Image (cartoon, rainbow, N blue to C red; front, side, top):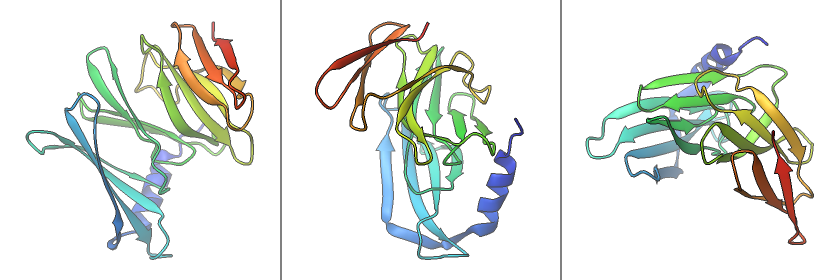
Length: 199
């Protein structure tokens, strides 16, 4: 697969104008570990200044205010997650709605991937307890939600390898938890528990 992330980044830069900021969309989120602050603002584009199209996300180190990463996203819906693995802190924050982006906050590096065929939208993030796997709840365009489990042993090597995929048992089903490194559970809209083995 060809990585289209640079093309997508360039397109956002061409369309971005800081004067089209939507002041009522400002958000600030502190990481669970308390070390980082994620600051996001939403902007219109030169093509449509009043439509929320680009998010600018800045990650700062709490205590010093130092900027660790700045990233743009081509959709105003904020799907992201913080993950700690092997003494590194990561922020999963896809730049492309249908892509993958991982920020290594410890090393201050950003990896991104997007392709024309990779149209799976990440909406929920559930790392296994040992953080070797990442269960993502998401969907393909106009399709039911499903769980895709990725190999997360090398977080900066994108695209993440897919281990397996499962359809959710109904539109209102929700991910419950990882019970072990190989097993997770989902609850359907009737309250029934479903168990999935990824090995």
